[in-house]
Amino acid sequence: MSEQDCFLLIQMRVLVIYESTMGRTKKMAETICEGVESAGPECRLVEASDFDGVVEECAVAIGSSTRMKKTLPRVRQILAELPEVDGLPAAAFGSYGWSGEAPDIIAEHLKNSGAALIDESPLKVKDHPYGRDLDSCRELGIALAKKCSPES
Image (cartoon, rainbow, N blue to C red; front, side, top):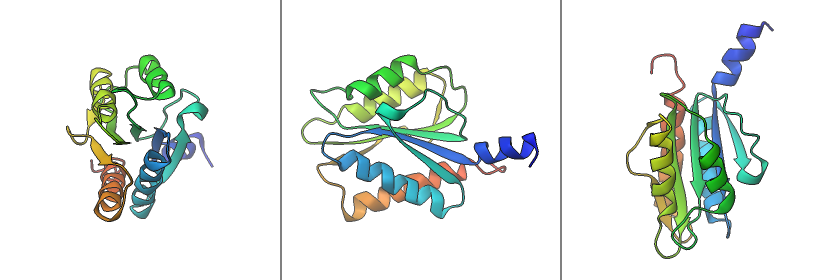
């Protein structure tokens, strides 16, 4: 396998980073990855505490539960250290119990870092994701995967 082949393999992968308190945002992240993989590309699913700071993928989604009207601490740190990602297709998502600001905060950081948000409205789920919520997660994964195709 040539170096160019390796580069193409890395580029045909979507990165999904999440931090979850009750497992709800984790479920969303897993379902987003299901959508990505159903459309072809691989998905690198990473819990925020395990993120190495490297974004080599063709698209990224970042998610966090909302706590006290903020993102969770590790996602907040990732956003603070996020390099310029000019034009990188991106999405924000998260679950919440009360107010739901975390996905909006993530979307704003991604936009300010130069990412190309695939939807101006982040994907938010109140409480546990079920039924239509999970369908929306899969659809987001498919939309991210489509951004990895050479035609996009």
